[in-house]
Image (cartoon, rainbow, N blue to C red; front, side, top):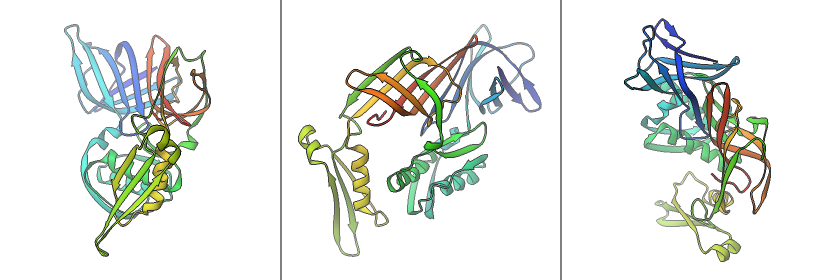
Length: 317
């Protein structure tokens, strides 16, 4: 294992204490690397310095020191983030006729970030006004539009110092999680959050002086669960009927949460990966590929475990 900190022209291989953790999520969060350095007379580093983690030749993490916390024994707890940390910045963007990958490219250029491969997301977004939004929210809005229109989900992530945008279908791993490889799991189902069986969209058509309403609903589930309504105001660039139907397809189901703790670690797994899961959950048996919403890797004394939050099929984490 190599954990390297670079301060200008000085490169350090610090003495480490306790475990190293690396966390990634599918959306809305940067990759986070946490570790503890034993201070000696040689090492000197500060916020903004580059950090690299390489294990068995595999490039795991490239990012920057954002915080340090020291105790009286000169143990320094370090938190480093990858480039996606800068997507917490806020800004205002007005754009038209752009794909989601072009929106990412626009932001990357404005904020002087390093970029790798951005897949063509195909769908052209007619126009958007994103006022005082985080860069995460601006990109996710474009990706959500693409999901509803093209039924394709893309993941934005940092690939060892270069931002990448990839179709999740290309992030499938030959990895199985079952009762032997996962120590424990927590499973829950609910209709209390992110479940809607009626979609109502409203558009103020000022040219005609009328309010246009678009509704999509599922009668059987309304009878079972009562009316769970999603309401949103839309603009004239949105096809209300198509969006209402797409939202109903997405939300007209129970949410099922599955977390798996202390699974045998695999460094390839990150937020957005697809992994095979075979587990008996009591009221159902899952035997399919599931999407990794969040993963936390823990590495200590050559032992590697990971905690996973998953979704797939009816699962929504």
